[in-house]
Length: 281
Image (cartoon, rainbow, N blue to C red; front, top):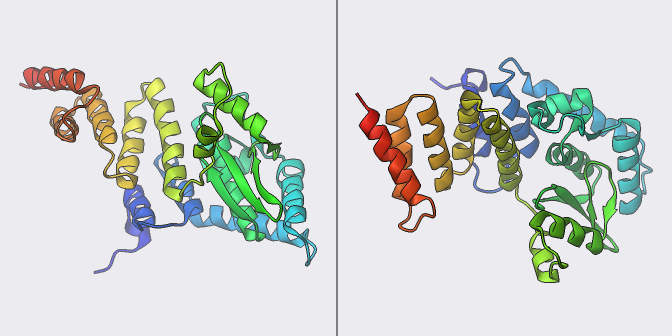
């Protein structure tokens, strides 16, 4: 008997979307991140709403619009008419990462705004990529005159001096980063990179709140997305320990300790494992 999407758990549905080793449908994968918090969320209705915005953007474009004109019209509509912007008043609100809430409130964080903006930009024929820039997600647009780097919370174009200042501020550097260092951070991000960044933002928020149940749900998705990243098993093991699930915690922590011989935190994790084993009845 075959299983329909309606019968899948949120985690199974997520796994079905990201199992491809290459590109996958980023917008749908991002949308379904909210299902842990909003289990009745209708994913298709969210995607249809994005399609409706796409149609309205396309109606504003002259048939022979050049790429730069397409970019300006999209930005005017997205940031000006629709009013999408950063939620500076409540930056660490988890809803800022949930696409259906971003669509409702017109407020998000750089990476969630970027995902929505890039979907619309690709729909009007622009060549765009996300940039996992330190501290602030960015996007780049291919134009006939060259690459333009843009802030997805405002649509503002950023020159190399602006980018160097942002990077220096993030790194705590007193001097301007080298061109080679800067160029490293201007490489296009894959859908997997972008999705991982979004989930790690949520993971950090929930950990700060000591909301271990939501932290666990987020790490479970990260492990589905990045099954070979040992640190996620370590983090899940520590969360499972907080939730009193010692056997599962030990399995993850043992897996982490066996992943390499020179782990920076190997001694501390080994001590935690010993403590968990001593505490077992």
